[in-house]
Image (cartoon, rainbow, N blue to C red; front, side, top):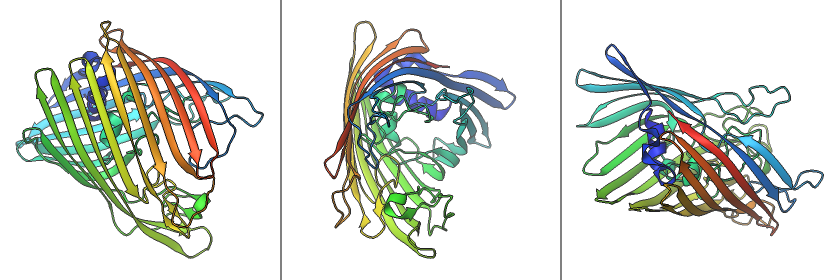
Length: 411
């Protein structure tokens, strides 16, 4: 099965039967073995908003322009619907593989039932290596920093925040309410062999991860209005982990970090640019004992912003904004094999030095209660309740409550 689908299932074992997705469709093809794999998921969501404030970077939904406070939507969840192709072979004492995937989602409410938003292509990479010395990856895949945070989030197989947004490809799960989005990045990465449970990955990534930020007077590296600016160096990301198991007890501890040198166009002039260094670090632990699972995660950063990496992380004249956050999660397997889970997460964005009490987001937080039931070996029924609250530095806030029912099928 596609490596990241495997990771997603392994990371989300807290929310579903571990047997729900053991392998894809295996096809021998000469010297190659082709694995066709993926998932299809969809959720009906009912959301009620309690306020009507405009908060930059806020995730809680507000009432609409005419004061309506209730909305519904049928959406793909946090994990995109997925069709992946992985080919593997062993040549000259080297394991060689390729992975290409596409994500055709259901979150489209176009007036003619069109396919917008377009199908995504989040993976296209090759690997080569050997268990004796590790492996090298080249291409586009999930980012190294913060990837374990999302892969251990129980809402990975559910919804989390931002449900009912018909214009989004997926919901956000715990992104922005406990961790920063790892995203899908061009990268060259090396992973060590597994050394009695210890493993590490380091890599360089595409440096152009900036996003447009007109509120702060900055144009992102990919902002079409200003054109991209040449970046001075690659992004640097890495992580290390230790996994352990004994009888009915197992777990994993991980740490990670990221460093980017960011150059933005200054939208207040026609020729100037802004440049700064953005850094982040995180730590997490997941333990499982019998029917009980516990996960804890924390991150901190300077200039990395909140929700999306670098989002609102820098003020044009006052400099970097610090940020931090994390989540706690507990699950329990009931006698019916249904997993009951509770999670609380929060992401904080500090003001830049000297910045006033504006409508910039101060915190986004989420409380989730979920039920995840393996109806068959491959099919899971999911029900979630999510409470989202956004506070701004000016003191205003938005809150919304979302109930979700749906299913996810792995193959």
